[in-house]
Length: 401
Image (cartoon, rainbow, N blue to C red; front, side, top):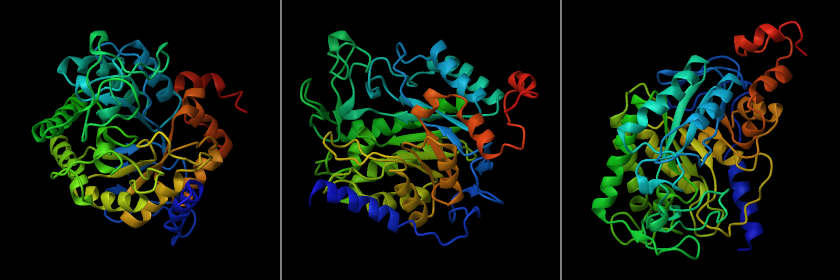
């Protein structure tokens, strides 16, 4: 099939799966989702998930800062999160955080593989919580894409050799994602089980560090996604081949993490809802997997796409990934988060009001404007005072525009 035609077909499938049956503006929770909501749906309606209440539906998407040493958070991470907590977002999800040293994307990525990481992270989460946002964390293993130079290094995205602090990447199959660098090593069964335990241990540390939402990274070609997609998984044992085998690592990880964290802690999973490549992971696969993880105690699917192939013809544009969030929400009966070129308040509000997702996750837009939620409030609800930090509110009270 022609690639452009394939992309149009994938998007059409997403749109077809999202035909609305509820009245616009009515907030309808997915069946058995763990979400409790009442009233009219809009961007600033609170959302309760298990024991956590988000003050609004605006979340900061996990974005790598590439600014750690030995996995430790520092002043940069504090400033990054503090600005967006004061800026008004409801949920802040910390970047893809390595569950092991070799689980980082770069040697400069955040980590949570040892207890010593906890105190610095606790400073971040304490401030975020004090200013009304909910601190979340994305737990990740880079898999085949690990041991890279950070994007602003002179050798950006090239492999870091072991003598310079790098490592040999691992994956479900010994294959390179890009040319160059060492041949990645295929994980043994014992190593897969150890990785599941590492996710669970990292989740326990995350709770100790004050994070209130845990997200598992099974997207973008990293280790979790690599097990799911036939483009990256050529195993012939219990972790490869059939759909049931390829989701085994996902289900084992979800079970281990769910058992390791309090019952009232929300658990999210980020999927690449499609690979955008024929014979890859599809929306239908994501819906099947979402149904399975919902039964294991996952509360929300964070719906991104792509990452398994460097040549995928992705039709990037406003809302281009939203149909996948809508499709999974409707067909799997689970809450979803929508991502991807969501930049305007009215656009974000419509996604929630139309029942296409339960939260919107902003990445680069929150880098450009940490106070985007305040701007959105002023645009969408101009006749009421914006819910901003009191340190700013008193000064702006008489000059609000």
